[in-house]
Each structure stands twice: as structure tokens, then as C-alpha cells.
Image 1 (cartoon, rainbow, N blue to C red):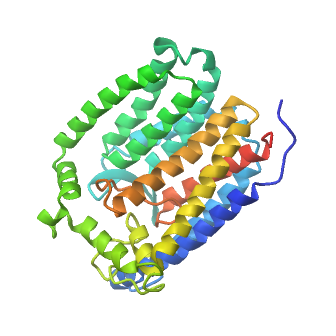
Image 2: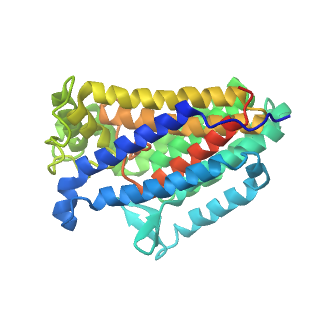
Length: 366
């Protein structure tokens, strides 16, 4: 039985707003040179980020005030709508190609990325699906295999774009939900073996993925080509030191680091604000992880628990991948830093998802 509605989680809300504010400042700082050169307006990306942040905040506060269990009823409709958009983006003339991936649909002056909405749609659907099959999740045929099949359908559509980074985040998040829902570890061993073979095939099928692996292992072998981004990212982080060069004083944003307002914004942040600034950002993300896990543990039903876990898992996985990429720990994946990087669909979706997390926290047993 659900408890009475509580006040919003002040820790979670404060961390979100702080990260959002830092993101807006850093989008302006990292993109001002590039946007002035390309659009004759140093505020081009910052103004759009403010617009997307406003829309996202409206979505967050709206969803936080709607009881989360309402979405249990509409989970199937939500995921089907997301699937339709994933199919539409693959149609020539409908989907827009950027950076070699056909992942966007243009709407007027703006564009949306359906794969971003699919991540949240699938989390909502699987939270319902797994909560209804809790007693059968230990069974391979009745629990694990049906859940895996549901995950692989949107993953296959995302890989047709292709967008490996988003696909990896989505699958990792869903497998985490499946594990917590009661799937057996032995079944995951089969997935890991198949996943390694599948990843090897995906890497071998696309030359640019092989180049990314090579660049990760030996970036200095091709410093002006495949290793360029990693090297320039490290050049940004290194000089930042403890306190940084100062806000707005990054050197790497002067056309050394390609589009520094997106995937590599953390590099510019570390260069300008130093180790202390970078650590503060990671602490704020840890607060979201802490409050998200706490919300999941205190949820009044399994649907709410899995929904909260999926949302905080999705955000945490993206943070870990992005920070690992910019510090040279893993190959470049094209994953942005939630709430910090420039992006319309990603920012709005992330804030909307956090609104759902806040809703779960308001009806928890804390």
C-alpha cells in the first residue's frame, strides 16, 4: 500500500539544479569561440541550451508531480511510440545524418533523437514487465529470454543507425534492471560470452570502430587522425592542475578539440576549473546516484523500485563512460555527459527521467 505524498527530495533536486547550472555555464564557455566563428554568435549554443533546460525543467517538475504508478498503465503505449520513431528515423529523407549516424528527425529548426526517448521508454516498460514476472525471472525460458528479446529489438534498430554508444548504455541499464529483478547470474554468463562475440563483430564490420580502438591503445601513432581527440582531451585536462586556468580561459576550445561543448565538455571543465571543479561535478553526480539508489530501496512497489533503479543506472552509466573516455581510460564512444553537455533531446529526456525519479521518491516509505 502506497504511503502519502511527501515533499520532493531536496538533496536530489539540489544536485540536479547545480549540475544544470554548471552545464549552461560550461556550454557557453566551451562553445563561444566555435559558435562565433560558425554562426557569428558566441551565445548560439548557450541560448539553445537554456531553452532546452527550460523545457526539461518544465517536464521534470510536471512529471515529479504526477504519481509514478500512473505510467504503469501506459508503459506498452510509450514503448510502442518510441519504436515507431526508431523506425521512422531509418527512412531516407526522414532521418537526418550527423557524424555518420542517421539518428535524428528534423522538426522545424530543431531535431529530436528517438534513441534517447527509447532509453526511458524501455526502462518504464521493463519496470512493468519485470515486476509482473518477478517469480519467473529465475527461469531462462519464462523470465530471462523474454526480457532479453525485448531489449534486443530496439538495440538492433539503434545499431542500424548506427549508434553504438547509445545502444551500449541502453542495454547495460536494462540488464542491470533484469539482474535486480531476479535473473540468475549463470544466465548473464551466456550473455557476456555472446556480447563479447557480438561486439567483436560490430567492431570488425565498421573500420571507424577499429580506428577508435587503435587510437585508445596507441593514440600517438596517429596524432592528427584517430588519436586526435584523446590527445587533445588529455592536453586540456593536464594543464588544469588543481585549480584550473580560470573560467573561460581554456586553450583547447580554440579549434583544437572538435565541438568541445558535447562529448568532451568535461575536458574543458577540467582545464578551466581544475581537479577541484571536476571533482565537485563528480560529487554532484554521486549525490544523484546515492539518492536514486535510496529511492529504489524505499519504493513502495517493485515497479517503482525498478523504475528508479533504471533511471539512476542510465545516468550513472553515461557519466562513467563519458568521464572514462575523456580521461583516456576507454575508447571514444560518442556518449555525452548528462546535464552538462550541449544537447536538446538528451538534456530534455534526462530532466524528464529525473522528474520520474523524484515522483518515486515522493511516494516512498522513507
